[in-house]
Length: 119
Length: 113
Image (cartoon, rainbow over the protein chains, first blue to last red):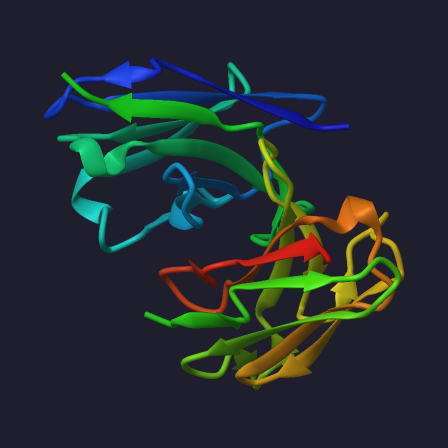
């Protein structure tokens, strides 16, 4: 069974870059869509963007200028970088994968990691 | 952006009774070339990630109890729990993956009356 685990700093200072890694176990990272979603405390879900199995990316226009999603097949990891963060970026960040190969429908989720933006 | 609006925001249902959640999209999420609705439903329990219940509006994900059903097409969708169990207490989200940016409904909190 595939498992996803997000990792990274839990506290980031305003104006700095948030960097998270999603480590995948139980399956290859190849041939899948990898999507990042965030959830501010007590609020709903916001789609950040995805990287497809071809390597193409699609980002939320509201974040596009600040977001980079990538994969490292040698490490079986996906990553998220969000630059110039503010308090509004405080959220639980989820890594997720398509439910099956080459499918964008989100079927697997990591447990999420809380990132707080504060000085 | 496609706006997803769920109703109600919360509902309390007695054990064994029916719970119905409505999701409306601001534009159709039905792709005419394959006649599929790009609509999913997720269940999120406290301190857990969301769990996929349905995709293509009505295709039940493996392992989801059959007391859950998804229906609808175009802009109007429904998630029904026919006989509410205690373990169904959660927030339910609809989600469109028809067009970028993907969007979610605001969530519907289901509780036991």
